[in-house]
Length: 154
Image (cartoon, rainbow, N blue to C red; front, side, top):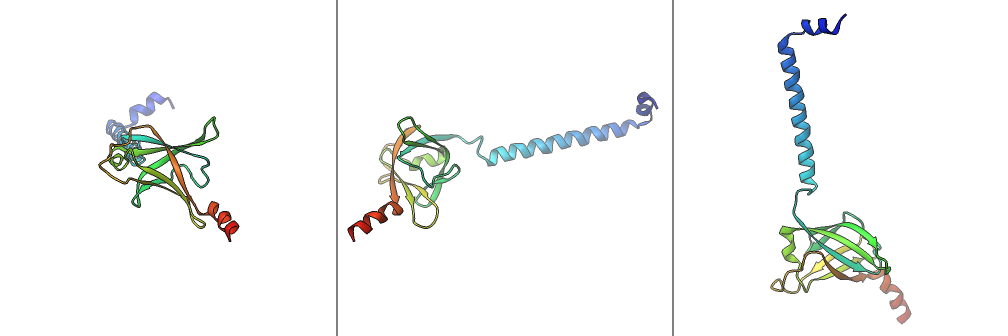
């Protein structure tokens, strides 16, 4: 059969229904994609802080930076610099940035049991805010590295 003849036998209302179904499907898929991007924080305004340390054992991409036990940022990238130090890039949403101050201290806590934790501490929230894209050193709260020192003393 000729395709033109087949098209003549399809009712016009069916073409409208197929068009509406196609449009609805495209809208649902577009809405889903937009929701997933929103949930992943793609549209969120962020600032960055770069933490510098000798080694990043236990740190992983996607790990939280916490302040007073609450997550305020996320590790986005870990790379080795030319001088052998590790640079940890952390994204912090703008509405959480006020917790980070010029005098903030960053600690990488690696317990004997459990996962490593990145923590931020600010002694005074009246201090000037931390500038965007600041590089800050990381202090280590590493119990595993302290055990040999304790054994040597005992």
